[in-house]
Length: 176
Image 1 (spheres, rainbow, N blue to C red):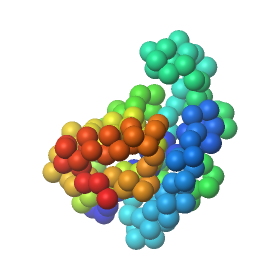
Image 2: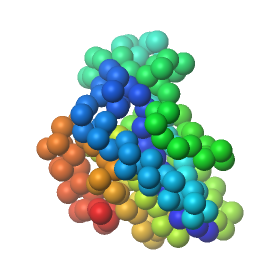
Image 3: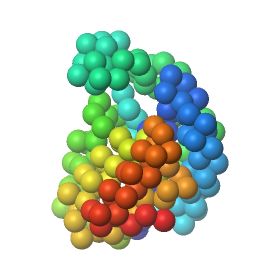
């Protein structure tokens, strides 16, 4: 199979909404360029979307991060319209940091004999959802090379971004 790009949570609330940062805004063009490169080469692109309900504040995450965000159906939940979206690119909704459905999809690809030759992750936030999904990918497909493009990621803070990149390196995830 071809390469796979996983675009993690490039949603309005993480870019310039409820949890937006200048660092997140600064990577949008890089992520857009990366998506276009993958699509033009005929590779697979998938998106994840952090997805919560109106009851977010009643969840464990809501009690630890009391900022409602990515509530299904709101503008903040939408993938940024500044990003190219290939017509066939699925969006996997996830209610947790790491996507259970992404793991299942990777297992199904492997069972069908369509294991990606390499997987790259980009997106937000490096220190929460990118690292969670990168570790999930390594758990489901340990022999597939996994890369994270640091210029296409941003963390909650610049320091936590760097800490997450270092942690992923230790887990044999290539950082470029």
